[in-house]
Image (tube, rainbow, N blue to C red; front, side, top):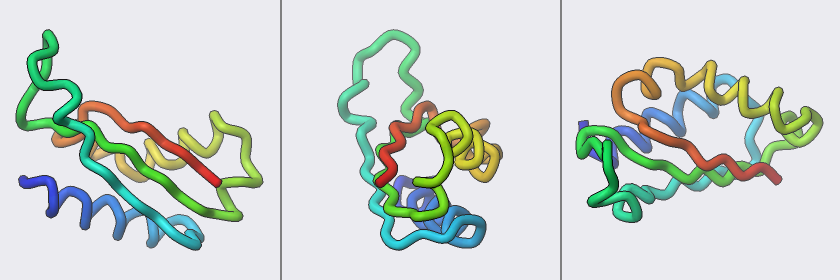
Length: 86
């Protein structure tokens, strides 16, 4: 899977399960090239979400919700997520 396909899947899954005002997803994999354990088949994503629904939750609850939604992708295509909620 390439990064554009992954970003499209992540956006669609999150939008289907969470009320989102806006979402941006950036590929930050280039920051980890050469690091021990880096897998070129897995990506590092930065997700910026504006969501009243998530803003009402504490950080742990909102992150758990996102991780649950993206469980399949985390096992196969995502190495790490940086989640920023506003």
